Length: 385
Ligand SMILES: Cc1cc2nc3c(=O)[nH]c(=O)nc-3n(C[C@H](O)[C@H](O)[C@H](O)COP(=O)(O)OP(=O)(O)OC[C@H]3O[C@@H](n4cnc5c(N)ncnc54)[C@H](O)[C@@H]3O)c2cc1C
Image 1 (cartoon, rainbow, N blue to C red):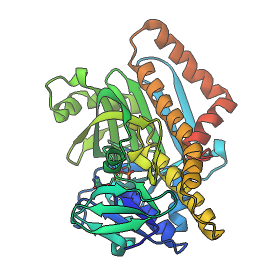
Image 2 (cartoon, rainbow, N blue to C red; image 1 turned 180 degrees about the vertical axis):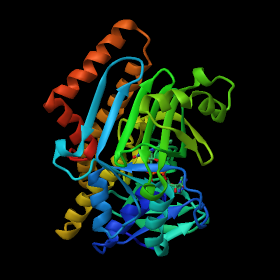
Image 3 (cartoon, rainbow, N blue to C red; image 1 turned 180 degrees about the horizontal axis):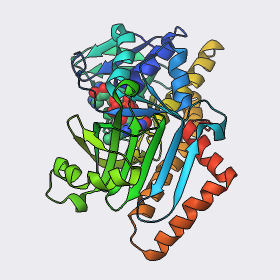
């Protein structure tokens, strides 16, 4: 096998890259560790796509059910600070779209199924000579020769380990709890986010919510607050607080999932022919729902650089393509990671001056158009570089 790109990881980002390259006749193969089985019908986990990510998917004909968010209302639950973001402020029809994780992953995987090898993983990558193919050995003893290895294998990237790339890792000491609910909120296209001592709580309309009034909740909580409690008990004890804040009744109707929250990032995304993309390169706090959008922006820039070189029939200069990708994406990703950390720390603090500052801060950002536009344009994906 001699595909131009070998992709480690057939999740959302790995499958997207394979499909996008295929649309330009650039051959790739996807190596996916898990078995090829249909996704669970139970849809709990959701993703928030920004308009840029949605546009990338539309261009490849990936059209899945989604709900539209036109406004986000952010409240400081312990104070008086408030800020709202609306799609009108960025002259866009919508601010973001909520999709089910399983819907998106399975729609993408189906389109690249013939290019995916399941139940195997990369064991070793042997560089022969710079700008020649490298030799990729799989755990089932197959060998592939490729120009590039795209590491899209998530947070504990296997290819990063093979390339001896070391991330820095931060522990938020929080868990994210997510579940779906029926809720009698009147506005169907508004998301609410509340920062409080009981955690960072976001409620967003689900796809098909118009018939069912269903919403998704993503709620991150300090582990110290939960102690030995089960997440379900914490949710049952504290949900009334948020019902009061949003002025609506919430009835849980799915299982409750929980995840430990960490961030990680690499000083460099590249080693010889290997490059890290999406969650393999970085993970951030889910408070602004930006994880997958950073991954799509990475994938877009990587494909753009590769396609540009390929279409000019240039000898593929791996170092140049990968360096351009890294320059365009690394600092943007790091900025987003640090911005999320800033918000987590700001709203975790019990210091009375910090509380005062954030009340004033949120309300004044709300009034200052240019600052709001800065935040929204980053979140909408306009600033991918
Ligand atoms: C609670 C929670 C809520 C979130 N909410 C949002 C949100 O609202 N919006 C948002 O944008 N993001 C959100 N995220 C983040 C988002 O889920 C991730 O950014 C996204 O899934 C990353 O996609 P990926 O394809 O890069 O990696 P992954 O989804 O991790 O996919 C990696 C793939 O690689 C495979 N793999 C792993 N190891 C190997 C190996 N050794 N060899 C081969 N294959 C391998 C895996 O099986 C998987 O298929 C959330 C995360 C959490 C935890």
